[in-house]
Length: 219
Image (tube, helix red, strand yellow):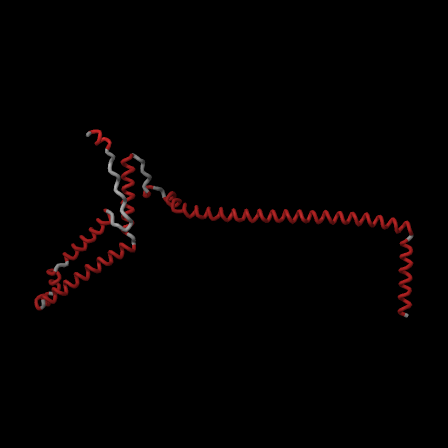
């Protein structure tokens, strides 16, 4: 029997409430509002209301009672509707449930002996400012790194293109230099042949004859 009790595992902690299902704090908050509204309407009793209108209370008490009931019913309905609208607009239930979860985790850490973090209200302003600024700085750093990688990629492509153009230019210049050397060698060879065979003189004579023929044709 003792062994069975020793081997019995502790019951698991209760699951946190669903975001839109009121947890203990949310339910207590709603009950607190309901109690406050009931107390407020109770203070607005018919005796106090009729004391403000003594003549209608004396001459037409039933009518005044009906008016008092309509007013209190309208005030109660309007207050509840406005409260429900605020609860939905501000997502109060989810916020209180999240607070319940955080308090439970803090209590569990305390029971396990885990050291709690520093309370935010005890931190210096500089640390709080940096803590709020950290997500923005991280996002900016990520964007800058992406932009830097993009520029590096574009620069690498430009460098490769420039190197390719430089190689093409060097090849073209090398081909032109070879062509010029071939022309110079051919010019030297042709110059030697012209000077050796007397072709240059014959060409000059032919040119003179052509010029003379042209002048005669003009005359």
